Length: 434
Image 1: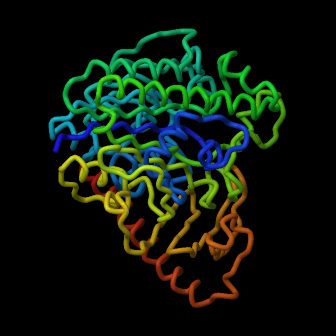
Image 2: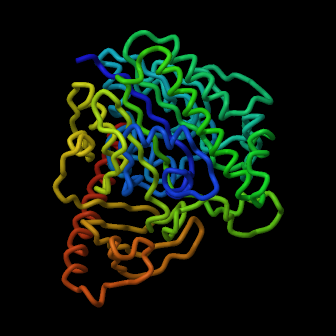
């Protein structure tokens, strides 16, 4: 069996309801819709965190954010340390003979020792921090001075005036066209993360929408165009059938006021959770449930919708299993049997962010001290929801189902103990290193 090529396409702040194949009434995403039609569309796919850096850490390591050592949004200062040294899906594939490259957003550390080439990637083109202007590739936000952030490997480069989504696609397509060995290509778009920038031709396609939805739709459509170009180069080079493509988003859509360019401090309404409660920064479904599409024409079925819950830390063990490589010391599981039409045992899925926690087992979800989005106040207490009958988490059933509540509270106790153990081990290791 030939060794599969692997492409991960990762978006930034894309909501569960922001694609045509996930029910968007406004945004046209024909290439992603085709990808889903040729593969497996996950309805209950989750990020491991409602914010970007921890989500990316889980994607690449196969671990919970606390186990990987990245639990919060990392800064942009050029001295910012990031992901602690550990194996990644890139380093495992590189050791197995794959060529590896990442194009776009890193957000797992800015200082040279935390750059992508230290984690198994042969090549990186993109930026290291969390967000940049799409045309100048400069970060302007906060109290810090403006910071240019565009790199080719470890060399800073300038491409002023070139739209970053297109630049990322261009470099990824060039790489795929040129590489001959089996490859792993991680395409990490920063769209549709703020600032809200889109080319005029993309904006014109959505002139009928109000501005905040128009620019969001235009940014997502440009990503969809990129997906189409990536699939096309795979098809032209005869490698589409033997290439695993995984598409997702790091977390749900942002409601942050900084998205808005009208000078008003209001919640931004551009992205869609598809009716789910919560946004980026929340452990409600809208903050953590995201699109998840798998395609591997030679192996996976086509046109399948899978409602089994799974999450980002499952990607690494699944890809390594598909590549015929072993995967150790991870928290995720190999879901290839599930993707190929099998079933999986019931799992207990867990989340923690900024003192919020969530536990899902089957249709039941416990949410502890949640907030609805970044910056929102937490709602104290234990809240129980049945996601089959109430996916929008509107009705707390804790008083009606005390037995379910107590079972999930036991799981929550185990989860908090595990997190504490990981944090203690990391602190101890840090002290030993100094």
